[in-house]
Image (cartoon, rainbow, N blue to C red; front, side, top):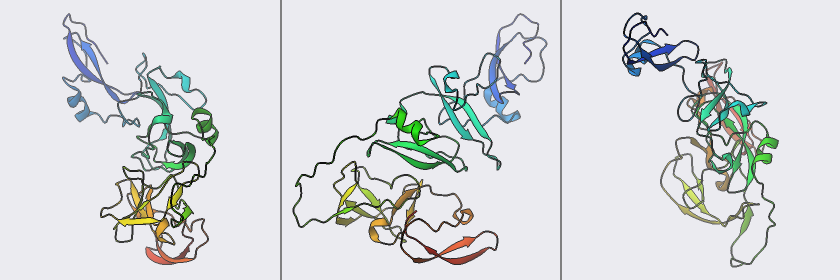
Length: 291
């Protein structure tokens, strides 16, 4: 960046090659170089800007003009209004990116956010409904603060559920209580606005299961009724071994044909087919029904 040697005060933009971001500066009107744009849009047209991994805004840039890098061992380097995002680049190598993102808040009060990248990073998030820390796969870009590297880090930051389950006769004996088995490989099934688990089918015709949810044990009522819509954009229909495990799970892939074969962790033996990207064939396999 060259301010020039004139006496004018002109608002201009230049491309910072170290931070890969278009930055405003004051140009004196004489001298300078070609890295001098009238607007940010003009700067972006000529120079490829760094894609921010932050869910909103751009990473913090220090006085040197470089992006402020943090890390799991030293997140306190970020300014008070920023938080340390540990993600991955969009390149195939998935280089770890540790930067200070704007908008620091309480991670325990934020919803699960899988992000918009293509990486598969094992992380933990705090589930406000169950008040427990659970595992999920982070895409590396665009997530929020409710994203912990380890289970212990999540549990030390967010309160767990220490309450005791009280068995109160709230329903008639004709209702059947069953313990809900979460069939999703990562995270929790999709819930509707009434906190009902959203069930689906191979044809994407959903069923909802009305259930009385004890936060600790996820008890369900077997009272099922129909609804007609498809899983949310970031969910996919998991087809399990029974109706109760055929639900909308988080982690829909942009290209399911490139997903690795996963047999699951259940006890069922379901005949299924998977696409082998190497042989370019759909081949049979046995799915366990969960995971």
